[in-house]
Length: 195
Image (cartoon, rainbow, N blue to C red; front, side):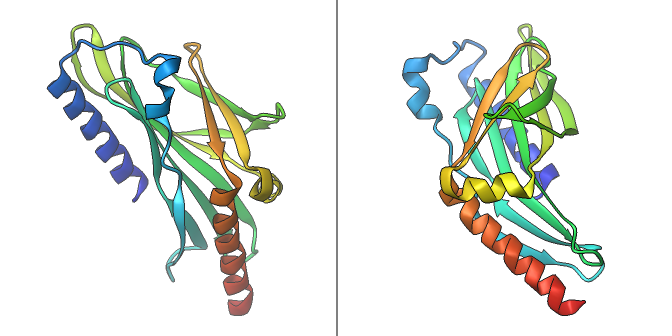
């Protein structure tokens, strides 16, 4: 699912849930966290477009959360430069939520306190009412290949921070990273055969 389509589906689903449930909601408690367990990024594929300067690897999007509290959508992506072989990988992370203000997520780091490059992709605001709006924020969080390789065994844990004080922890288990990295290696081998 492309980034704009993923955001559109996410925002529409959250808005529909809010409208059908009304604006009377409570913040989920820790005791209810089980219902917020994610579906993880899965089924990596290779995209080869003769017009593109890169070979792309991506997973299907995973999701966690529940409307109207907040829904996160995440997917792993890699781009291999056809000319140089340079490879970059990133997690595309989106959150749609209802609140009275933006959360303005602005940085991320690993559980080893290693800062990660954090790029804004999109911010949108949807329907507003009763002092709240439906917000959506999408970011690309750059993941060094060495960290992903190490994560094939033990997984990878990230914390995402918002200027508003919000924090999110994203856990990518090794069994999710392994097939993604295998597809990245396959795409790199494809590129090497073509050059």
